[in-house]
Image 1 (cartoon, rainbow, N blue to C red):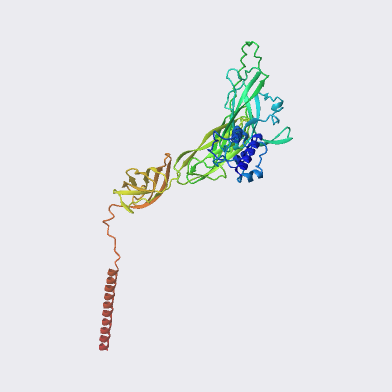
Image 2: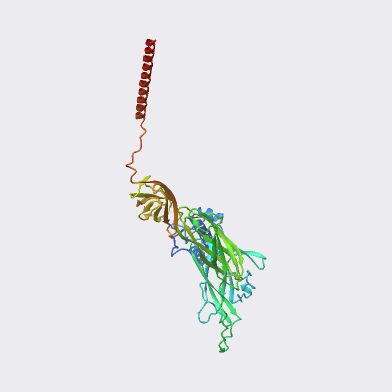
Length: 536
């Protein structure tokens, strides 16, 4: 029995030596065992496994040819899976994993892409025209790249002899499906296209351009390849000709300078002759094209409010002007409201202008229109305070009081009194009054008596108030007053007093006397009658 088994093993080994691809290869590919090496004293089957492993390392990736299976009688005779065993019972042969094949980069030499007059296999040359060389390099890859992307950079050769203008020619190329051969089919490739700028002073010849291609596959393995493409220059100088010294070119005549047209503010008219805080005002601004030869076109004018004290009432602060002829003018309008709290003074309406000339050259300009704002004055003066009765030759005091109800300061407030029979000793000076404050002043007045007839009696006078605004402009207000001038002796004269008690006393006395007189008459008559009767 043991002899039969040994005979079968020998026959199996002889069969393996006759076949170039042993059945061990399949087991190595399907179930790789790393770190296991062949025995130095192994049989010829082990040598076959080593040879097959070397093929895997060379980049084949998988064993070529048909992979045979051990015959059934061999499996039955061994009673195992068909793997030969040595005397120790261990599987023989090298079971190391084959090396992974690296991706390969290559130029597509069979197809003609856009920008190419021939395929590379037909002698493609980059096109040279308009001072540039247009290079197209379609690159194919045998495997999958990371992000389907590779990087291409150019080496233009030595700087002395190259006809190319040196620049940084480097770019990332992505995998694309493109049409080739006049759109007869589509292929997937990395199409690297470059436009190489040529020197003005270049010589004819064929110059190599080296494309350095770098990529990385899905497993992170780096791949790099260089391709050389020749660029043929035929529109340059002959390198064999001696340089011809040309006479210096005549300097061109200097062209007369062309000056840009200027647009300036000519005038600015306002709807109010005097602009007070709180008014609404329209500004009509006249612009003039100072150029006598150039027309101004496509102009926009923006008017900026001078401060937050101005409120724009127009729909927009920008006005469009189609054109201003040479030396012509145009008028733009804007409407503002001056806030009541605006301080008195001069403000600037700033204009920003953008326009173009007839050649399409763009220009910009600016300007300022002046606007003067006054703060309205609001003063209130109390009536002149003076005695209602004065005596000739007396000196009395007259007093005035003023209040500033406006938002601006009032300067040099004073009052002048004029009346018949009164002689003030001077002007009543009150002084400067701040907004929202009150001040008063007084003066001595001598009573001299009325002119003309009687020096005594009632007199009516005027008091005139003078004051100035911040600009020094003087304003006036006038009031009236009355007083009575008396004689200095009027106090010693006795005037009859109409006393009610004394009047009734007098009447009672008179009545009593009349009663007594009547009683006497009656008594006298009674006595006379008695006498007469007695006589009879």
